[in-house]
Image 1 (cartoon, rainbow, N blue to C red):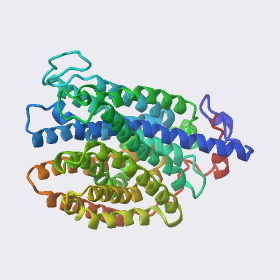
Image 2 (image 1 turned 60 degrees about the vertical axis):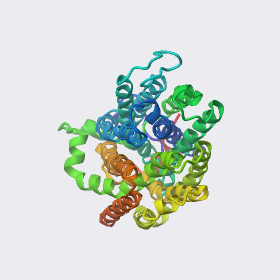
Image 3 (image 1 turned 90 degrees about the vertical axis):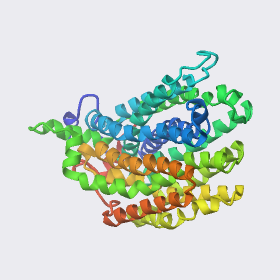
Length: 476
């Protein structure tokens, strides 16, 4: 393959690039994927934290506490149904115009939606003195709209970030490289808990609608997102398109027949992989969203633990969660993705049955143990997932396929279980929550058993490009 075969503006990989440049290139790719997902998920998680601590009071004040909590988590769930839409739309553009350009758009959309949430007046009270009497039903309506765009952006974010690392990764190191976008989730959980803790301490811990925290303290983490987005855009723009995508575009230019839509191809040729991947990752999603947003609400409202304690434990749990991601991702390069994810799912089948009996002892230590163990089990599966999904799909529709599989798991494990759990807790049926989570993990175990090991799969678009040439691609 020569430089003349490449699209305009792209350069051919040079096999003589010095080792120092190779290392720098991979480091920049890792930074771009990790920082980007950190910002995206920071925006996503501060909504989850606010849905647990603020939105029931601010946007649903005319409902009883249990119903308000259910309504708040219903707005949280909206994003999960928007994510497959985002996966299909951004997957199309990611497979057609490039991973890098698409990731810039996902970051911008997420940032704008998040800042708007921070400016929304409440049902009865306004923002920063504006709309003094609130805007009534329009408040939760606008909240749902902003939440939809958050989910729409995240639907296209994760697949692109993991493809960025997987398509640059050295042979036998895709788990290691795929770890970086996954770590962004742990960083984001730490930041979201930390910012809410800081402004909760500054503005006070009052849960009344007229308290400083409810009036303005909760808004500041949302508004700070604008600064983080600018940093993320600067980093992502500095990274060049992946060698695998360049090669796939060069090959497409030589084909006589026009290619069909990436979405159609992914559904037509690899629908089984989409379903199996979605089912296999359902358990980890249910663990994570139950272990973060839902437990934050349960600990503060039902167990009456102080908000600063719950948020502080969230920060500590994020560090432990990040360590679990790193270890499992690296280890999956040695023994395979299937074994590592299967271990997590098997642990989840048993652990989820004990979560609420332990929590309901009311001990702060019990809450901390449940949070830590839940996120460790989740991290064991989440680490290898960054390499797993890109390995399952062909290059020409890899962005679309990986995004659909991931976001299908988000609906099954992240949208429906918190809603069902909120309803069960309101009815006093906490045992039912544990049984539901365990059954979801059983389903995931079946899908993992059906899954083929992917760590040895070749992900390059064409055998003509060698591993050395992939690593030699310079990222300015």
